Length: 300
Image (cartoon, rainbow, N blue to C red; front, side, top):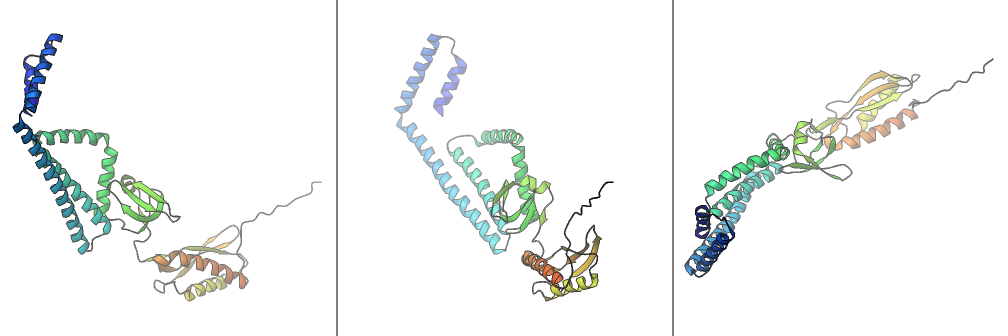
């Protein structure tokens, strides 16, 4: 540090205006370098500072990891959401690690006040350049705080549907039903509607069934209601319902609405759809399908 200060003074005082001056200047530098090398006390002083800085960094990093793990352990004991635990653990660790780096640099004789100012200015410039990333970070904080979904919830976000696998600082990872991993920026999640399919313990299963215009509507209704009442996964409360919702072009359409536990939704949907078709057809009801009749007329 003393050597660099001397160079700065020499440049300020004398300057380098010609080739001869440059030669004299570098000769003086060479002499000072040799003088520094031949000064064991100065070398020992610098090596001591480097060793102390390294020790501060090593111990501080260990301490930061210990404190972040301690925070995570406390949150786990409080039965906090695993997503919140992981997010806060990483956040605390990086904040403490930044403080440790500043402390280590101060041991080398670097003025940390000016360093912090430089970092603040650099942070402003980087923030303007990476505003989208900062937006994703802020959205990640909002997701963790307000918790619109939790780990393993099945959600529909940013046009994608899948199970929540992990929430990171800048993005969220979901796994789709066909086992594909999709990484979505947090900013897109908070800016669009979030549909959580597993937020509630029960769900209503909506099934549209149509019968022919010549069929007995009361018979069709009673058959479908009986199928729902006999299914072991259909809930009694709320009770299932059947509404006639449309007189379509080729069919009379019912909206069948049983209730089931969230985890049984697709099982109930598939079972009822299959049984409705079998029971209605076996009882003589007709399930229409789109068809086109073409009439040909002979021109005279």
